[in-house]
Image (cartoon, rainbow, N blue to C red; front, side, top):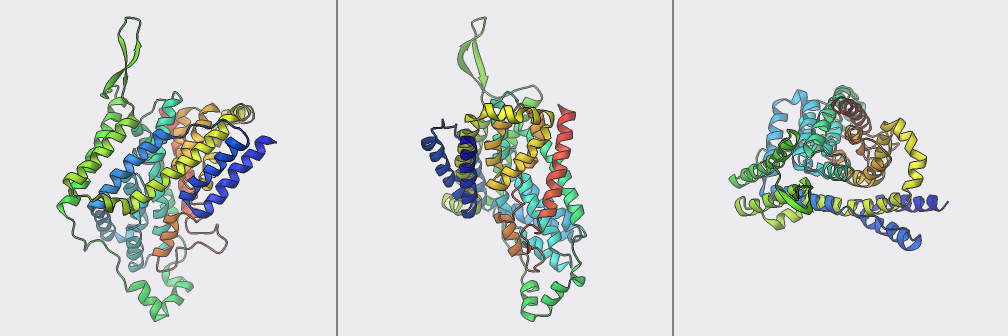
Length: 456
């Protein structure tokens, strides 16, 4: 009974936090932690400090990239591709938003591209809901495929602590194959979705109003008229160089040639020689990312004040607070009831390990963060005895917050679509992101699960 009451406290805190947004989720979790520790005298869990440090370093680097104008250049290249092939926008748009997220490690970098996708589709006579719905999904799906994203970094850090040694590149590589299959399936399902614009009575009625018609067709969203400076391009080269340097260490580990610097642990082996331990990848990522950010300031004229006010840095810092509070509260609860959880769930999840994906999905709906879902639920999955390779394959299931259309990227996409075809829906769950989201995550998990079985 006490366990059930404490679980209700955790769920109540999450429900209240959702009403106020991601930053409030982290702060509200402090209330839950306070009640569990001081009210029920539960031993506090361990805050995910390693994960938080990596996110801070990666977000600082990506924020400097945005401040230097490098992200505008990347957006321009994506827009040129989309305008060159407008007939294929339902397939190309999600690929663009997906790879932008993979590169910068956050799905909040694509807001500038969404109105361009809407404009191209509308001017080509394509129902904007088709590319917009799946493109918004793709911008979040890419998080589990980015070697510097919070979810991937959390997965690698926690997995290494639990005896499953895997690199960022291995996790991102498996999930990239799986998620691309899922996105292409969602794009294919969206290709003829809904009525064509010339047969849609709602859209045709909007066209009859001159002011509404001008609102829909009068503006032209574009980034092509922005002049890209040499410093902006240099910031992109610095950013890609940092990514390549991080990937190099992972590639060498996979190939059996570890080039990471090693340091004495303080212990000695049987021959009396000091035991050396290679530098952890989470520290390598932190060092490389903050170094790249410094070079952008020195060489690419990135302004720190502009970076702090940018969407990438702000959304990243919000994620830090959310993960800090939620993961700490969750670890406190699960750590104190691990014996009971193993007795109740252990045999079932060991017999049907894929069911952990349903847990990840539901928790993601509640806390609106893939990184926080991994940080709070992955330790429990390992303690329940689920093999690491299976968890790698099921990692796409940590994206479930499209289920309720309350995430900023989905809401923004609805507002960017001037045609009115991308909607929330009268019954809340019948929104434009439900179908592509469910197809993408389901197919991604199936493919990832099969890949994990074959590779491991």
